[in-house]
Image (tube, rainbow, N blue to C red; front, side, top):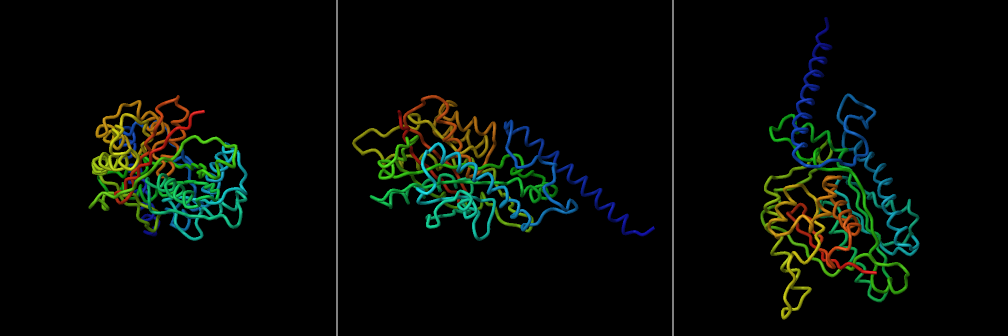
Length: 359
């Protein structure tokens, strides 16, 4: 008998055995995440690839991202535009963000075309900011709108992440690594969108605001860049996430919050406490939420929207904090002011203070 078929059969059996072990490892970790459901473009186990004999390469994952990102982002933007009540021709800027795709032109260009925005719309695409991307995009939109001064600015912000297409590289790592990777059990696919307007645009519109952006701050924690990364490999993006991230991120939260409060409140006035706000904390993981809650002395009620989104959607990276802000406004009157916070590679800390617009 030809030994080649035997060798091929042996390789296939070993590969299948390794994959089963990898999945069992991930299932054990998954039970500890306290995530009930996550959104995916296709269930794990349902092949997205024509060639099922090998893992997809980066070219194939890119093509799949472009296909689904256009659909997800367009729907999220259309929903935001419908609620805003304006016309696509009035949108002056776009700010998009992703960390699960790379390439030029960016995915945002296809979304802009599908929405029928003006050819001269001012577009910005952020990449490499990971889970901090949602607030980085919101901050960039606010800065652009403010820079327009007396000219009306209507900025369409959208985020789209599809980490599930990179699961092959995570499963490969699980076969070799005694510590299972967190990506396949934490992250989910999704998109979110919103409109940021400056004062001039609002004065010319009948649209009602949901939040006013008061101020924002971004900072990096020294000597922590190695704790979180999402480098590109031949099979896609591979998450590297240290167990130290929740502690390091939470330790930077209080001093950053204090610095931001000093830019909002005069020194002669008592500064607000963290408990005076509702919190839209990026649901990066249960440990991330718990450490931040302890450091800032918050109750579950302060973080109710973050816990709810984490339980039902897991971590959608840059998409998540925008979705938390949306969820929060549907959870009763709440406190007048909101702190939105997220952490990303760097380690980067993004905090934005918003004020509810009461009608």
